[in-house]
Image (tube, rainbow, N blue to C red; front, side):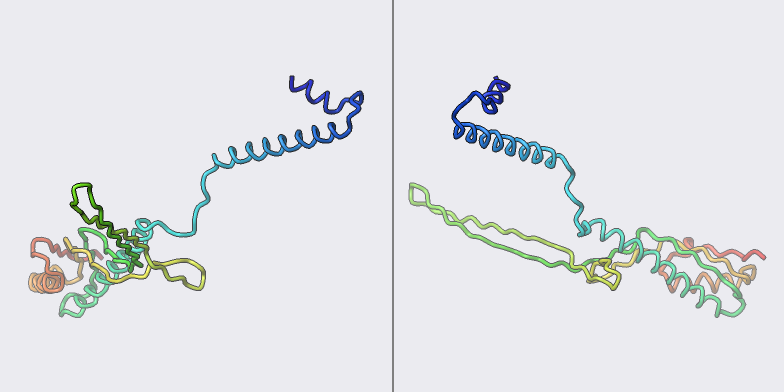
Length: 201
């Protein structure tokens, strides 16, 4: 049937040129509509393009992980410097263990909309419905290279769970006691969570 229609449209025996032109136009329009429909269906199956915005949870995790490593190294270095100044300790190395990583609390841009609707029923009673719609987005700052970093409001430091110290003078009982007392004062750890060992040569 479709073949016959096409043959009729392009047939030389048909004397009506106006009818031929109309048929050709209808055919072209149908063809264009078909191509557009096929293109729309195929493009609908493609995955949406990735946006430049970083998901909130991912951004928070990345910032937290980097910050935790920096904070841990900084605390260990400070404690090692203090302990090395105690008489008889000598060279010292410190390792602190934490219950969790540092948590950065980002700054949010909050938009809040509130709407109140009053409804009246047939018996004359009325009620008010309140709806609140809140949207929260993390605020980012861009550095010179174009990468984004969340703006932080505060940092919640992790809890120190234990400490291991190696020191040159740890074989002396008095020096070992001084190290334990210093670490206890600096970290708030109980004595049994602080282990001190003589540094190997």
